Image (cartoon, rainbow, N blue to C red; front, top):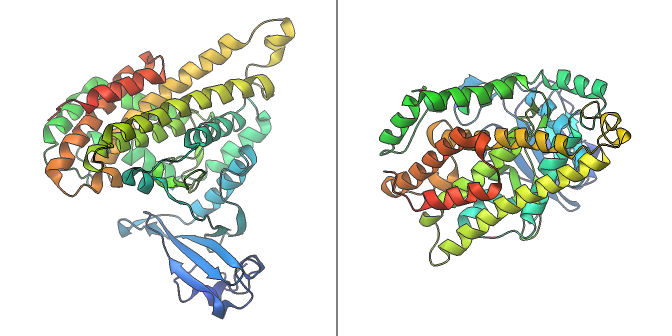
Amino acid sequence: MTADTAYKALDASSLPSRLGTLPELSERVGPDPDEWEVVEVGDGNLNLVFIVSGPAGRVIVKQALPYVRLVGDSWPLPLYRAYFEHHALTRQAGRDAGAVPEIFHFDREQALIVMEFLSPHVILRHKLIAGERVTGLAQTLGRFCSRTAFRGSELSMASSDKKADVALFAGNVAIPAITEALVFTDPYFDAEMNNHTPGLEPVIAGLRDDVALKVRVQQALQRFVSNTETMLHGDLHSGSIMATGDEARIIDPEFAQYGPMGFDIGMLFANFLMAYFSQPAHRGEDLEEYQDWILDVIETTAAVFEEEFRNLWKTERTGILYPASLFEDQGQDSTPACDAVLTGLWRDAWAVCGIEMHRRCLSLAHNADFEGIEDPARRAPLEARNLAMGARLIHTAEDIGSVAEVTAMARGFNGKDVI
């Protein structure tokens, strides 16, 4: 515990004196706080993040702020989100060992987590913008999404444990409310904090005039708020993944809640597709080759996800759902049941994918993939392709039979002049 129990935001100068007595830091950084070097590195929307270095090593100190950093103190946000991030990281570490940073210390009063410093990892989004590849990326992400989805559900968990977990994470009210508004609602009307690139007005008007599309989006929201299938990361995008040339780790699950099993992988794929559509503004002669690599990551991630899910179905299906007593114990094949679960999962995933593609261009907090394109006249046509494909995914989510259909769709929109 820190000496001062009343919450107070850290800064680089106060951190050594306030946290210097913590054995979790002194053992990993050095016993003398005067020898520590503290650098604030957080570039996110919600938190303070510091790298603390010393003669013994480095750690990350992450502290929640009582407001949305992107907006300011006019948008208050409860500090308890750090409590749920701590619980989410603990569960993710148990469900996919090594996929997330190790936690060394948690202080609930200070909304503070001390965790493993990942080096030489950088944010995956930066790599995608720079045209860099990550060997094994699809395998890591496919396994993580599959293992956390399956092992956090009543396909695997004891029903009493899962229900207790649902009750716990139900307390994380304010953070999911951001998703409910910014992702599922605000893009489809003139919300106060919306912003968009000039030139997209005809495309936006078309989306907001499309009643059938808005019905489908609200159906997806209804599933998001009412379907507690598994514990979600809740904000899985290329900015919540850190990578080297051959390793990837997942960070920042403070949006964790229980929800549909297809949510995380759908949001993840949306961010890869936005990276894909933004590439003409970032690449030169290697444009086509790198775009093909991004689509290959999507296809391989989906294949690994499904392969791992089917393997877990065979080896870890110990919960109350689809029990062996109804199938294998009677000499019957449960594959049709697994097929049905995956069909519903992918329907949810493709709908969420399309919705996230809209949100990141129209609502608050856009992606650097597009925002880093300085010329609006260059940016708008690329975002328009992204918006158009998002609408197609929302309308056809239940009819998509394979990930190859999605990547073919992306290639088709990549050559279209939407505006």
